[in-house]
Image (cartoon, rainbow, N blue to C red; front, side, top):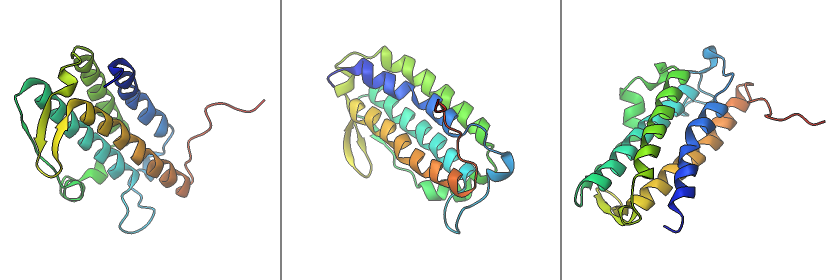
Length: 165
């Protein structure tokens, strides 16, 4: 990992990014599915929260334990069985943001050697802490594309941050 501080800072930006992406979302649109079989906004944000918590657990295990097992999870089963559709988006975003703040503190206390530590994922094999942080960053980026598309389809697009002069 060439510059852990810049990667950690990018990780820390996830909370504000998700907060911005969900700003002004009408609560009555949160559970609306754009198409059958596609997740609603509340399900998508609940998935982001679930995945972030799981990924944080994996990172903590790699930092604290010797060669830990990193369990996979079935994201669709979690959405279906944990009533993710009823999770208020604002609440999920607040939890996501709090988790990112806590993990940012932990990551800033890690040495360069810590980022080379690894665990054994049950599906993909060996993963280092550096790889887990990168995966966590890219996971949010990947799903933000879908979040913005869903908002646009529902007519609730995020207003532009800056207006043209």
